[in-house]
Image (cartoon, rainbow, N blue to C red; front, side, top):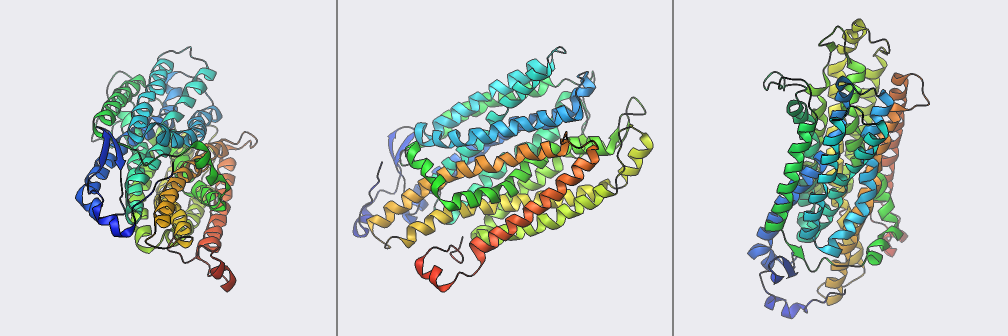
Length: 506
C-alpha cells in the first residue's frame, strides 16, 4: 500500500492526534512531525513500548527456561549426558531464530497489538509442555527435545516486538526506544536464571532468599510463566494499539534480502546478539561442568552455578540501552566497532582462564577446588564479554533503520512528497530487515552451545577452549567488516556515486 503525504505548505493542517479507525487501530501516525509527536504521539508510543517490553520479557524467559533447568535434570533422576543437555539448551535457539522471520511479517499482516496477544498466548505451549515433561520420569529424551524446541516460540517474540516498536518512534529516538525494548526482553534471560532455582526449590539467592524444602520441582516454574502468559495476552488486548500505516506485503518485506547491507548487518548481529543468547544459554552448564562436583554428597563442592549463571544475561541486558543511547549520540558503527574490540580482548581473557583449569572427568573434589580458585577471573572476563554484547546489540539495531533512512534521503529531495513516501518505505524495509537480521543473528545462540559440546572432540575441556578460539577469530572478522563498510573513508568516486555509507551518521 502506497502512502501519500500532504505537501509542505499543508503540513500544518495535519491532525496532531492519532486518527483511529476503531478503538485500537490508528490510521494517522506521523512521528517525524514534531507537533504530532509532542502532542500525543510520544504518550501513545511509550504506552505501547511499556507493554511490548513486558510481553517480550516473558518471551525471552520462556525461550531460555531450559538454559538453567537443564542443569537440574540429572539431579531429578534423568540420565542425560553433558552433550544431551547442551543440545536441549541449543534447540530453542534454533527454533527461535527460524521463527523470527514469520513473526516480523505478522506485525504488518495482523497488527502489532493483535500479534502481541497471539504470540503471548502461544507461550502456553512450551510452558505446559515443560510441566508435563519434568513431572514424568519416563519421558524419553526425544520428547524432551521436542518440548524444548517449542520454547523457541518465545524467541520469535523479539522480532515482532522490535518491528512493531520501530514504527512508533521517530528516527532520532529509535536507538533508545529499540534498545529499551530489547533490553526488557534480554532481562528475561537474567531473571529466569536468577529466580527459577528459587521457584523450583533448587537454591536460594546468596543466602538472602531460601530455597523451598521438599526437593526440586521444575514444574512450578512452568505454572508461573503460564500464568504470566495469560497476563501478557490480556494486557496487550487492553493497552496496545495497531498501526494502520505499518502495512506491507510479505513480498515487499522480503525484498530486503536483496540488499547487501541486510547480510552485512546479519553477520554483525551474529557476533553481538548471537553471542549474548548463546553464552546466556550455555553459561549455567559451563559453570557446573567446570567448577562444581557433586561429591562429597549430599551438597558437593566448588562453585554452584545457580548463584552466578544469571549475572551474564543481567549485565548484557543492562548495557543494551546504553548501546542504543551511545549510538544515537556518536553513531552506531563507531560503537559497534568498539564493542567488538572489547569482545576480542575479553574473550581472550576467558580463554586464558580456561587454559589454567584442570579437566574433571573423574569428578574429583580436589580438582574442583583447584578450578574454583580461577573462577573469579573466568567470571570477570565473561561479564565484560556480556557487557560488550549488550552495547553491540543496541548499536547494531540503531544502524539498521539508519541505513535504510540514509538511502531514502540520498535519492529524494527534502520537503517533497517523494521524500515522505521514501522515508515511510524505509521504515517498512528496516522493520523487515530487523526480522531477517534477527533471525540470522539468533542462529549464534544455537551454534555456541553446540560448539561447547562438540561430540567430535573427546576432551570436553578441549572442545570449550577450541570454541573460544573460533569465537575470537569471528569477532575480529566482525570488527574488520564494521570498519571497512561503515567507517573507512570512501574514495572520491564512491562518495560522488553515493554508494558508500561511511560517514553517513550510521
